[in-house]
Length: 255
Image (cartoon, rainbow, N blue to C red):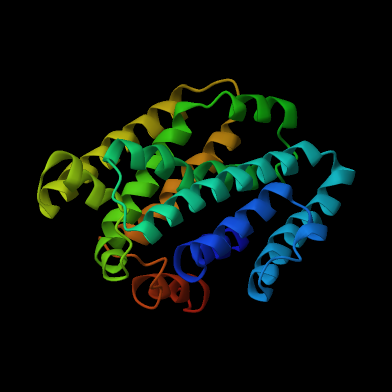
């Protein structure tokens, strides 16, 4: 949740100089060097660092410090991607689709979410998991593509209305000179192709335990819920997503 706040701050609230200062603070990972930040950004960086520090205190006695550091490194990488997109947005710059995807695969955050998910998996060897993760397995590029393009399709109209032109759909339209509907179809096909890669990697990877791969597979399951109907239910959760949550947690199951 705190990485979502970081994304929203760079995306919708901070000016570019403020976003730049915030992400520089994330790279330093030092709460003693945040005096130059506006007060509202101090809240963001404190929430991020203190949350991870609390996790570190809990996991260090369990021998999981390396997994926490892995997650911190991914948060820093995520921040740099958020800043690049913020710069494009503030300048009204539409990069090529290829340029956009270089950054977009990182900004999707799938590597970060997976690293976060591995922290507490004490039944799995930490060194083995981290070595596999750092080998850049194809499953993560595929997951990132699915999320990034699914999100861009669902949020296209809303982002354009806010002047955020660096969207995968818009970039594809510019690079290939196609209509919005043609871009949608092309990006949806990319998502389907990458779902196949995820399944292939899940079935064929043998160097880490199955529960690690299952954790990765659970990520696109959630993405599918958010964006299945072509709507952004993560940003606007009061429709279908709310119904799912109340059905799961509140409504009794008939016997």
